[in-house]
Image (cartoon, rainbow, N blue to C red; front, side):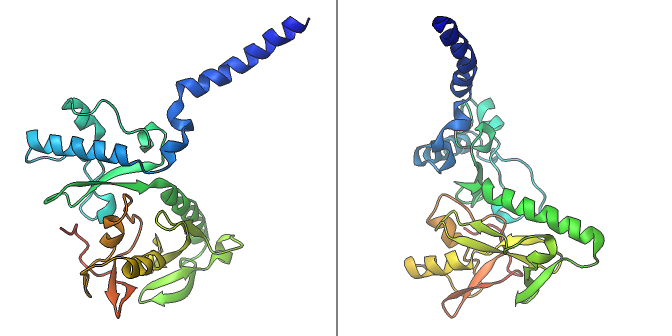
Length: 247
């Protein structure tokens, strides 16, 4: 009888053990953080592709008005077809990770970076509530004005007990979410930008898009954000800046 119980227990446990073996990408904690080795491997793959395809990049097509940090997602299938890459990185969204691989500076210096899709998923949840609110109301749930044409979200109107926030991929602090006059929402990176402006030497001046300061000192790009510039040493919203990819 004891042996029978042990046998039945093994039958129950084996599928769970096999699941962990067959799908390691979804379960490895290392796939939840940017990996220097994987980033460098992808950068090498992009450089090799450029050598054999000098007038092309292995990226997916996006609309011209796509925000600059989301505009150039890497197309892993192109790299596979060129026999440069066997499979997508283990921490990529395609492999069960939390990062989308993208390029910045595509024309002059194609550089591999990642988008933390957990932040995007948080915005999606907030957007669902905003959409439901707008189905019954004429205007978006505007809160307080924080800059010209930029507002906080009236979180009570969309059923939140507290203001929705996103964990910063740079500092792990909680960042606010803001809204433009059209009801589009963005992560407010001003706290992180202020820290980086104080921490790192830079040559940014008023009129420059200073979000690149975050990308220069991190493998992660500030996706889902409005442009910012610098004024009196501090980051300020600058939604009208030409945010084409800087060199």
